[in-house]
Length: 233
Ligand code: B1M
Image (cartoon, rainbow, N blue to C red; front, side, top):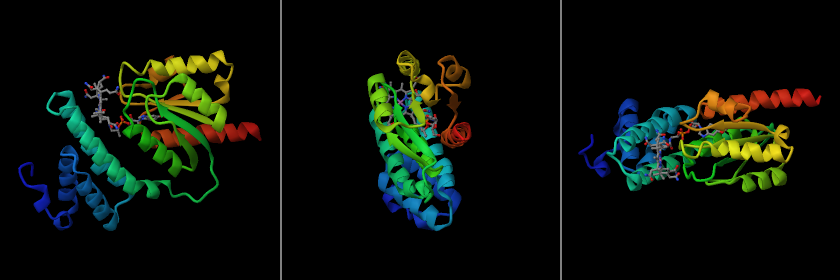
């Protein structure tokens, strides 16, 4: 596959497994148009958005991550891959967010200070919208003041924080401490996630829960929200 000119490949002529493999290659090569086309073809073939996300896009990004770690890919190439991933996610977003129901609760989410990784956070936001939450996304490199200003403005039920770097994950504790100092920590359900975190870290910093992936984030948010609604009744 690698040596074939992607412009000469008729994606629609590939069977599902070949198309998913080709999409991994196209994500690796940062080909956003091809990722959009491949995503649309899989949707037309009846694939659900969650399956396309996990099998074609997230798995493709995992492969990129391995070669980034091993020094085979560098930041400019990985940025192109990230753009291609986002182009595919943009096609799926309205399908994942389709709910029609009254919002279950509100979420404010952001990637913490010093960290510009946003693909995972964006995915979590999409899945939360799909689970019926109204989501305010603060973007990347979010400091404690910005989180707190957003909590005051939007009055959410849940605060979500994302970190992808071992150097930025401790900043989550800084945000939680800032909430404690203001006496507002218990006003919010605090959920954290990101590849270098684990459950132990989540508990150690005083979050309510660590969420391994976007699906778990949506399930966890829903479970905490149901408890909160029951406690109000
Ligand atoms: Co970066 N990067 N990166 N990077 N990057 C990692 C994270 C790294 C593991 C790569 C590696 O070495 N293998 C490594 C971190 C090592 C470490 O800290 N231990 C790393 C590094 C070192 C860096 C730089 C320092 C590189 C450099 O400049 N020398 C630099 C840092 C920049 C900064 O932030 N200050 C950097 C830059 C970049 C790019 C800009 C090129 C690009 C980001 C583009 C973007 O996001 N717009 C990038 C990328 C793409 C990656 C990898 C390859 C992929 C991350 C990703 O999008 N994964 C990543 C390797 C990897 O993770 N394997 C890597 C797909 C995504 C769907 O998964 O983000 O884990 P993930 O999200 C999941 C879960 O974690 C969870 O749900 C998501 C969906 O299922 N989750 C949450 C995430 N957030 C959540 C929040 C929640 C709940 C669940 O709240 C409730």
